[in-house]
Amino acid sequence: MKKVRAHVLISGRVQGVFYRMSAKKMADRIGVKGWIRNLPDGRVEAVFEGDEDAVRRMISWCWVGPPGAKVANIDVEWEEYLGEYKDFRVLY
Image (cartoon, rainbow, N blue to C red):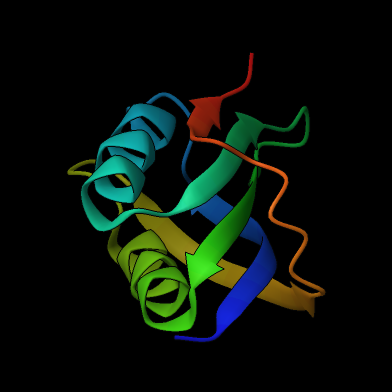
């Protein structure tokens, strides 16, 4: 399976709705590595690494998010896979 890396910016109502913790649960479930954090401008930023199918599934999940989230847009930048993460973390 091809390994990929995606740098993702999610906008909408994505802070204060347990978006990051819900993303961590999903990433852990499907084997995606990387991190997620809130940005001061109200967006959420994440880096996903892993098998291409799992990363694409994670990006699809981001469009829905947890109950209470209302995603307006997602920007995805595909980057070179580095394999630098051992797990998925919520950054504070």
